[in-house]
Length: 144
Image (tube, rainbow, N blue to C red):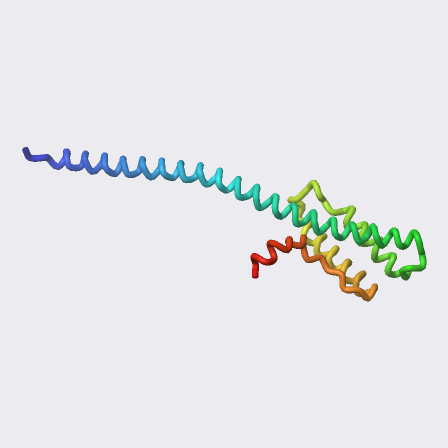
């Protein structure tokens, strides 16, 4: 049995069509799986980063609260310049957009708080620094 040139082109057309169909199905499957995986990974990263930001903001807020308590007990405990810096840090903390993480100014605000905190610490003559949540001693031993 001899095949005509029309039969041969029909066979190649069906092979090309099958290949394109399989490529499209593979792309759709991969895209769907990628969206699902990307969403899950994005949620995990967002939760982790949100926790870290909240932790740092809480550290600064705790320091401001302690300093303000000292000022209430003994108004002369800090210079007026230092009290003004503490007030400015408190204002920065209040303005931080906790419920708007996509705010374009979030990083600028965090940088301003870090700088203000360093200035306050330096003016007090103490070395306070936020280094993140301390790991348990068991975790510390595993890292060695």
